[in-house]
Length: 563
Image (cartoon, rainbow, N blue to C red; front, side, top):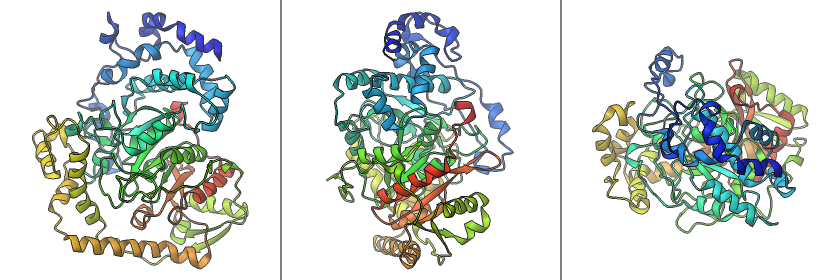
């Protein structure tokens, strides 16, 4: 790859001259790089109209394209760097990068067949190719790190033995995670100039040498703004689309951009956040691996919150090994997060995951899912054939009374605390409370809240007392843990198997980890995933089980139009 690397370096100026003919539906040339038009807005009314009869009411969109985000502002700064990658270079890099996990990429770098700069440029080329074409855009990448190529070159110069595997790997972040040099919008227009500092997990990633490639779209305010609205929509970023079926399948939310970007191979890894299902859902809908960790394993400091009780960031990747590596890279004790535990799973615990077997493992499976979902049933039978013991369970019904009050009351307190502690430019962002944001939104409801703000209204109006809230939290945690523990302890289970985010609220209230892994595709082509649920801080066990399942299932496919 040394020859390819030199060619990339040498062709930047030439590529600028021929960009209009060879580069992604660029509409016009300009006299200087600062004026180059890489993207032109389009009329999305035909697409919106085509979705008005969609069987899923949440996919009857009011708009797809953002009304405020100019993609030229996002993509111009790295234009020269990316335009130097020829199609021939890209195809060579693709053969070395596309199907590799992190350990494979690191081996290629160590052998001299790849550089970190080439890895970054490969993913940027893909992002530019698909996201600047209105017929393929997923409205996923809404900010790029303008220094990422320069930083990759520095990683190449400073590479040495003993670095964490995340070193030099380009990572995308959900846009509610604080990142210096890129605004942290949470998808909301009031936060479009929120220049917040690095979140704790971002500092951890950078300390281990990761490259922050950019920020991705999300369901606005982590899907705690509007009722019954499309997942993956934000006023700032527009409507995120699913690469397995644009405007056909939901993206899942709220970490919609993290899921879609992984499915389309826009980076090595992505970080999402979850309160209840916001990692599990988009991971499942986009056929990628998503881990919702135990509350406290990863810090929440510097992340725009819903609930300090239930929020957590988590890794989203295309395979188990990468998921474990990204998780490890973000871990650490954070004194600013009262729930942070500083758990240590041991040195390089993430290695050797592919050697795990299903033989001798004991899994609990839900009776109603066995009866109602053929893919789940077939998957369970495959796991049984691999030597696992399957125990059909029918847990008692556990009402989740008061669950939304946890979110309402926490957000009412936690969002103002975030604003006070993290927003640097308070002159531009003149709000302090959820009620203030609601008033701001009402000044231009068509642009700022086209689907309303029903959940914000519930936050403001929830009259649950502090004493009642503590009672709700305690009861829900006890009841949901019993929901899982009764079966786990009675039958000595290694894990309970669910589908997608079906039991996300139970795992959330119990503060238990959940790992979702691609399970297959429905007849329509929509992805579906198998979800492993365990007890607190059993992430290594879940990842070992997921790796054993991944090894025998081998079902994940790259979306047809994003290969």
